[in-house]
Image 1 (cartoon, rainbow, N blue to C red):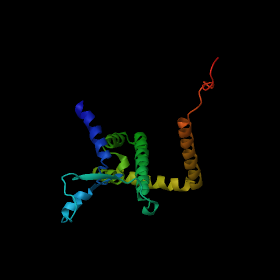
Image 2 (image 1 turned 135 degrees about the vertical axis):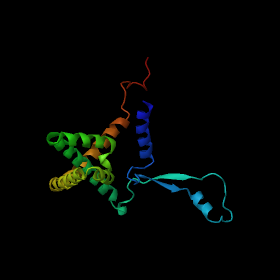
Image 3 (image 1 turned 90 degrees about the horizontal axis):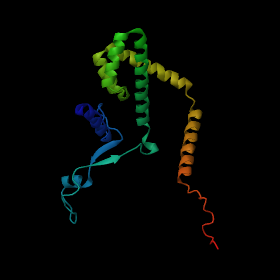
Image 4 (image 1 turned 30 degrees about the vertical axis):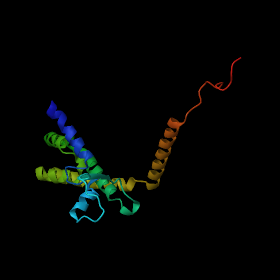
Length: 188
């Protein structure tokens, strides 16, 4: 039982550290602290050389500036279409090829389709036919999404959701007057 509970904890810890099975980092990047870098160079006059500050610092970079580009968004979209295609193929196999369905279902339980590239590389090593089917389905689903996606409508939905969130937050933070309206008056 302890082993079964340890796996999600290890996965959660790896996710918090920004480590994914594909070897890419998440939103967290590990960088040496400035003092650790300073020790690699000769010490300057007047600089403090203490034992503190060694090790790594977690720098959270959640998207950066607009000039940095949207490569993280592109990767997430591709990973999501891999996930959708995998589940579409799984549903097709359930109806047409139960043994392949069972195999792919157990494969998905061990390997996360949201890892996109890594997931497909491992799947291609195990079952080339299923990997090709997922890749073709992924491309087809993306093509359908591009044709149906209304960017103006998406912009409106995001704006409306932002407004709803801020309205709800305002309602939560406003201090409403109580029924004790006669607080300042004295009773005779």
